[in-house]
Length: 215
Ligand SMILES: CC(C)(COP(=O)(O)OP(=O)(O)OC[C@H]1O[C@@H](n2cnc3c(N)ncnc32)[C@H](O)[C@@H]1OP(=O)(O)O)[C@@H](O)C(=O)NCCC(=O)NCCS
Image (cartoon, rainbow, N blue to C red; front, top):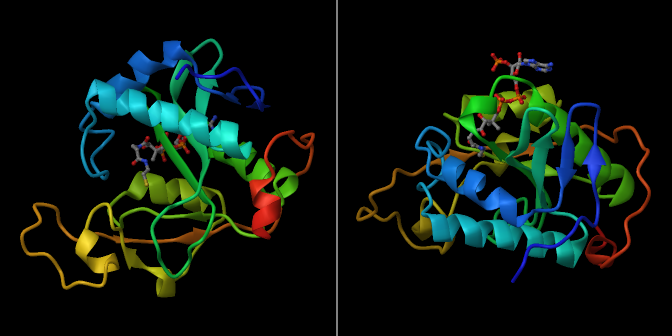
């Protein structure tokens, strides 16, 4: 399936959050193959796995009208990674929920791009999609990701801490801890967003998943 044209573009003076393009795939594969970028994620991705993930991101955008958007920094990088919204498919105390997430190439860390893109995303989530809550989570050691959450004003709810099933499947399936797993158990930390951010985007067309969900 080919990647689609833009349905929604969110932009700031420095950034564009947009739909995915075929030309994004090599740069996405490169960052997904970088052990530093993937340090707190289950594993680096092979080219085919990376391409499949990009297509899943775009399918989500096509189906819901929101998703994990490709991040562009005009003049610096046509594609540097993604920032956006997704709907986790595992069960935890805070699901069903809408999650905000991010992943960008190492060369672009430390410029404030992710926090800025995340603010655009939250603005979309609260003012256009009218979500009441947006959640984020990461492993405790991922200090850079937690710093983004802090900069966004999100707050940690310790009662929602959980074992991520992608890292430790036995926990959420109700079984006992797997001693055979090569991966350590990691407790992730959900955060909730501050109430409302500035309005300003026209309501997007397309499927009204979020309105039907009543969230
Ligand atoms: C987590 C991740 C997205 C954070 O990226 P980041 O670049 O550190 O985050 P920001 O875009 O908010 O940038 C903040 C930094 O830019 C600096 N900065 C520079 N210019 C800036 C500007 N104009 N405005 C704001 N901040 C600016 C800030 O001071 C801060 O620096 P610091 O890291 O020295 O404190 C990135 O490390 C990453 O992709 N990691 C791998 C994937 C991952 O773990 N994803 C999360 C899984 S849960």
